[in-house]
Length: 238
Image (cartoon, rainbow, N blue to C red; front, side, top):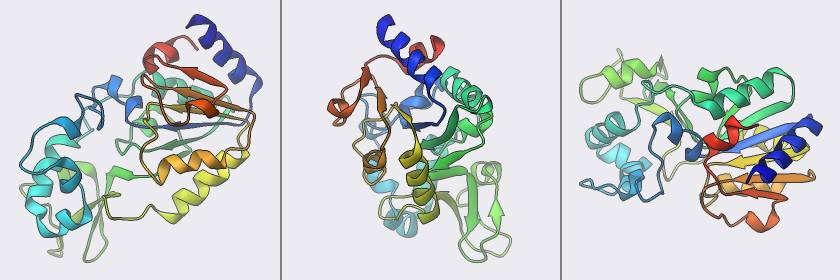
């Protein structure tokens, strides 16, 4: 393991156009539960399966039930960035890391100081009235009683991509551009099972692809370096 971490340090040192692509595993060490692990959200019991609750159709037809789950499980305001978020922000500050492309909606990369963050699945920090499009922050939504409403009377929707919704075109286009131009791509904390996000890896043209994940992924065979270890442990040592 130490040998692999040394190899990663060496790759980071000689690269100047790094892109980091991350999933739920990046934030689990901040205390935020992931989705697909054995203790993740999809293996907990609710009146409806979480995948159904987190769909556009469910949000429209069962808004109150949606918000019960959302406020209970998606409030990331109380969490702080961990060592991985901080190391990535540092790499950006010294000019090596050009972008973070994330599947997370918790805003912890920005809280750690990262500026160039592309949030494929949106963010709990942004919320809009479906009627007049007025912006509301996360505190307003999470502190609201029942379904959060705008002063115009419209229902407020979090700017997160629900099942059945498409990814934001601008975010995808910029992510592809950054990945295509990267010389080193570090992929971490993601099962790489969720399309279309995981398909973005196919745009990487650089020489070095690194995968850091506790479990194996469908892309392991394409990587130059695979580290099956906790991300926090790796981050502490680079």
